[in-house]
Image 1: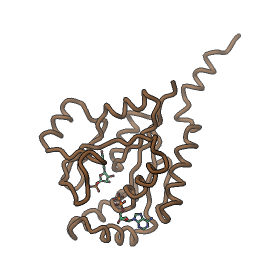
Image 2: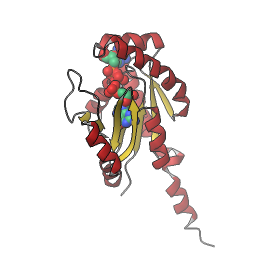
Image 3: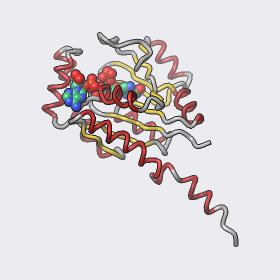
Image 4: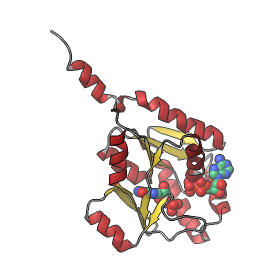
Length: 204
Ligand code: ADP
Ligand code: 5GP
């Protein structure tokens, strides 16, 4: 059986990742999503177990100690981590899985799973990012300022990714993500075994 593909998606807070994922999963319900374990307090409208499992700092540190996380990062005072077991299960079952992380998490996953395809969700401009983040109305002004500061560093590190999808028009951006997922099946880093297979069957 073919192994599932791992798609690692990052982008600054407010760039529209959640919005694009909701649309993506409507169109591609067969794709699995990695539910992160996080210590941030729940926002209004968030549901336990939908995108995140909201856990205590103690529980997070025990997951870390027991090697249950594929990667983790501390972002503005809270821990965010990707549980390892569901990702490995999806790969082995031949399911494609999408993992949302920050730029540090993306780097860590690529070191552990070099075949992972990375996508950066870029806002059309810094000004529009600020408008979206403020307009969402889920953070205090202090947290918006901190997130906008983080965004500068994250956008500068978009060069580390395989693909950049600009989220200007939602439908166009979702089309682009689907196209990346489909064409990346042919990417060299997902086909290394194929080359070894052909070379190992050469008759002299
Ligand atoms: P993220 O998950 O990256 O933090 P969200 O999906 O929560 O971002 O989007 C932040 C805000 O921007 C939300 O209010 C959302 O409705 C809005 N938004 C997302 N994508 C677009 C877009 N393409 N055009 C206009 N507004 C958008
Ligand atoms: P938010 O608080 O807006 O939900 O997320 C804050 C940041 O953490 C975003 O950049 C988001 O992509 C990132 N993030 C979400 N889940 C994970 C995860 O499992 N690991 C890491 N490293 N970052 C995550």
